[in-house]
Image (cartoon, rainbow, N blue to C red):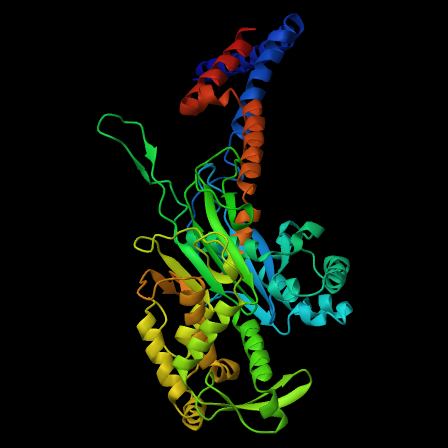
Length: 561
């Protein structure tokens, strides 16, 4: 027994001694290998290191990707990590200034697709906007206060855009007819005040070229763009066809809509015409909405013109001036001046040439409409090339049987806010509704208004509804020469739940090259990534098996050497 135990101890001792000798041998062999062939050893370590780097550098990163997202409108702009782009537009109109906020997700990368620009909405789905009065043109005699008047709009926009997006968010301040009507010296004084002070009032990206008094023609173009963009008439991604004899796809462009807008000071009309149509340069425009100027997919030729002084506010001032001139003796005798363009028995006070006088409405709508039509014809210049519209201006022939138009601003307000006949336009419907309103005694109207029966109309709208609806009918049919039975007009303020403003068209047009810039940035990112990880193309489909094989080979190299 003692002998057995002794033998076991000897075996254990021998085994331990053997392990120690083997370990010493391996350590000695590693050192010997390193000294004899250090390059093979370092090569093996380098292979392992490169595989590790390859693995790390090809993990998914949050690069700027072109994807189509569906976003929750409720809180998408609250995140500091928002991937949206933003833009702010202040519309400086004749009666006041409004601020609009637009945003868009990353572009898809397809040159034939436009940016997916949307107006920012609040939690209830209403457009995020703010209006202040008066307009900046009212500071003609005190231009130093013009910029200060816009401060509430800037603060409003800053409250709705993520802070980390301020510096990359362009701010556009675009003025319209109110500023166009000012003498050049007074207009320039207001603009100079804005150039000097606006950059210090917000952190938005603002340069001098983003402050502009746009022409009526530009305003008409922008509204035409906005309308057709919302209607999807510029989306050609699915509009292709093939012929039985060919499988080559051919682009089929959607028919665009014409637009007419009657504002406070001016009127604009725009509609697409054929590419080979010959018109004076001042009455036409060729626009390309694509990011590539050589691309013709989004190139359009449109007839567009503006008529300053034909907005409802300017028209009313002109009408009152003529009413004064035609009744000077009656006014001097302090007798009543009767006006067919105001509701029956409404007494209104006006001032012309520092003379205050009162007019009393008779509610004769047909007589009012005929009177306005006569005034339009008398003020029009000689038509040098037929057909002509307002002021003897040439108007490209319109195919009334097939064309469609949208009417905005006063078209909508006059037909909807009081008369409730907005939407699909009908001459008879608007004529009859306006006739009933004008013929009703003002005392009854006041009672109904106090009862809240006209929630969409303010006091000014309600008082001058009779005149404004007569003006719309007269301008459309006697000025622009649209036939009375034309049924291709729709009056609107929103289309498919989206507010239609020329400011949307301005943003779409002024940011049209951004997709190209983004695509160039993406190409740079992809090129850099390809340079760093070109080997990944080879390893992509079987990375982990190849990693295992390479690691095994490296270990074998170490053991062998």
